[in-house]
Length: 140
Image 1 (cartoon, rainbow, N blue to C red):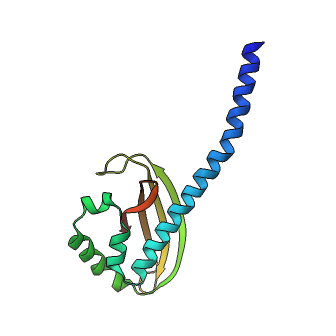
Image 2: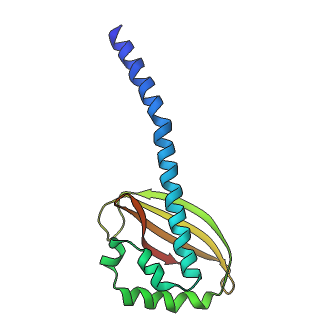
Image 3: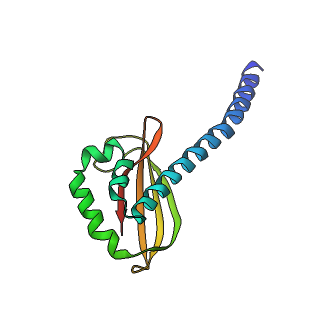
């Protein structure tokens, strides 16, 4: 009887914790989405140096600033204005290729630019000191 009581009590405890855990995860995801949107909007305004400053230490330690800047400048201005950007996918990862293990979120946007109708923007964020920061940006 004591084992059944203990099992029921443990189940109730876990069920009471689960909603708050889900809420915390949703709030974390929302914070990451906001950070990703802010980053791509900074790129939209051609504020590439400001965008670099929004990236975290993971990106800045693995990427040389002039290389990153030159790649962005070579690609983004030729696309024109953003017509529409839609959140496509969000996925969690404990590892990312070529980077140290951590808490990563990959956020993909389907984006229609003035001169490029079918684009996929991917912003990978990593949690650094409790805050989501950009780890990498890919445009396809």
